[in-house]
Length: 85
Image (cartoon, rainbow, N blue to C red; front, side, top):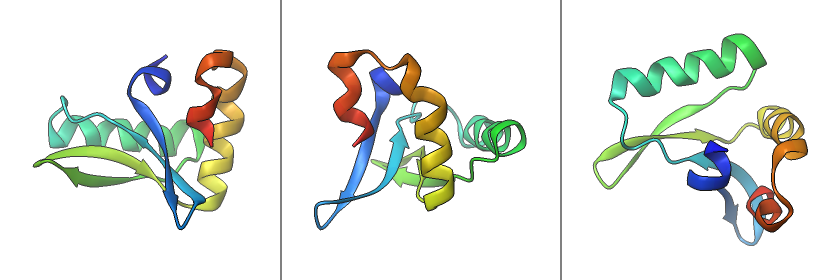
């Protein structure tokens, strides 16, 4: 749900290079916790990236991108599949 609402694919030179989870409403420490949970539970490595003075979660590593997509794609509504790239 969260990704469908506040997530997006990231492209560089028209090539998918990652995903953002727009978590700017959370504190830095809350974002760190979310990032740690993604790593510990799902082996998804993410970084915190500054966006408009706040932090969001970015998933750039290829294996983490693939794991993230594989985990969430069965739950993404058809009209939101474009967000997966």
